[in-house]
Amino acid sequence: MAPNRSSFSILLVLVLMLFSQAFARELMVKKQ
Image (cartoon, rainbow, N blue to C red; front, top):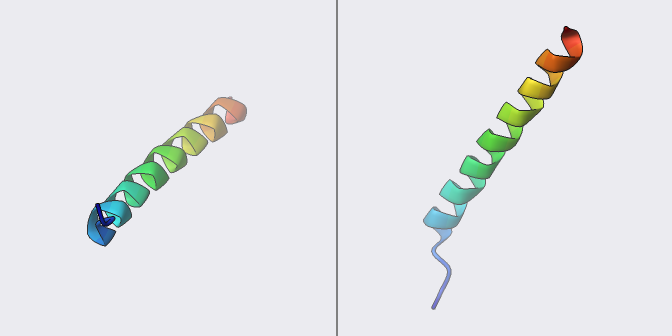
């Protein structure tokens, strides 16, 4: 089964969005 480049990039973007969201939440908690 050959890896699909487009699906892999979509997965990468999804993980990046989740990571940035968690990072933003951490910053908001530290600000308070």
